[in-house]
Length: 258
Ligand code: 13P
Image (cartoon, rainbow, N blue to C red; front, side, top):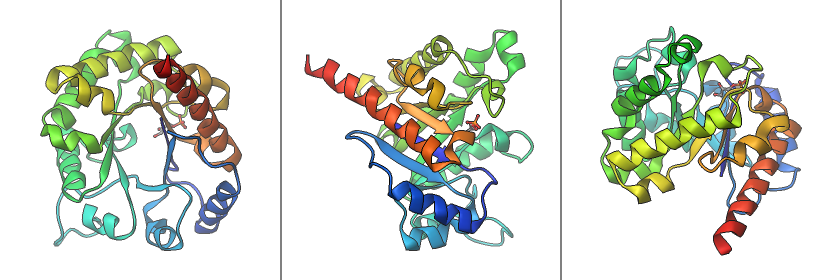
């Protein structure tokens, strides 16, 4: 299980450090649970140097390498700051920040070339779902983003399904809706690669995931954790999600042992 936080454009630098200090005092994640947080980019170098009690993530990356690209930062620069995970294709960047499918694919390539792990986001709008094209939409995003990759790169790919209508709205996909899409995603990865690759890819759910609904979502067979926005801003709330992932992981390990 993987619980990843996306702080988006929130927190001062002091607040980011306070979070890291508070989180370090809480119970460490259970066996088999990974924790990653993507703070705002200006804080990454300092947090990477100070050390944080979670994997350090970035929320964005340049689609190109170094050069005359004012304001951009490359995947190699992120790696040099201690970043391990990079969120690519978030709907808030796809919508209005130029991250069309082609740019998203370039970013995925740059992240993987730098040896980092990509958290690849996909998800449909409310209109897509109401028009019953949500599966097509997500499949297209996956095809251009990751299903084209060489199989050996897939060990550094995480997929986050984030239905746009559930992000920051308080509306959550039901466990059935999440599981249905996650099972479809797992199936498409199996078709493009094989069952072993598919089983090894963490599939995260994102969209108003919070302590009150995490147990139900994480209990779904194909939900391997969450990409968390609002509930990742408070160390106790985020820690409650990490604990929920621990409970789900313990049940999976028990089931495997039988
Ligand atoms: P919320 O958890 O605030 O809905 O945000 C989800 C998200 O966009 C994480 O990337």
